Length: 165
Image 1: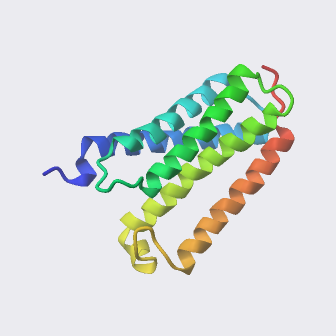
Image 2: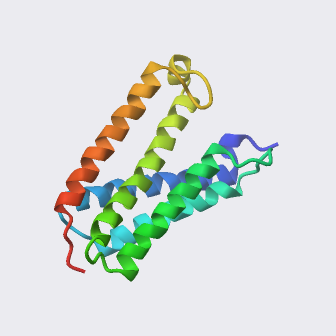
């Protein structure tokens, strides 16, 4: 039996996810200062779609969708809206704000899952907030802080992101 930590699918999915998060944070940083990098944004969207899609390749034990699959579905929906707003509507009118909000929400979902996995996989954090998903005041405080940071960053990005395509 393959150890979960060395399972090729898990390693690929984790790598894709970390790349998606890094690209997403860089894209968000660009939006917050009013800049647009076509290649960076395209790679962010690609890797974020890939991380949500590869999540469906993991074996499922029950008939019901898992919480991760539900988050993946919401993320894919957000990404479809962002991609449509960017490529089909060229960020015209309200599509600029829709693109920013849907992109920021997709990044936040990835970071939120990263926080959950960090609390599950790191023994010291798991001891403070046991369970899968984790529970406890520290975990809730960390997730609330992450959400607040993304709301603030998203607000700034909506205000400042006015690219010329």
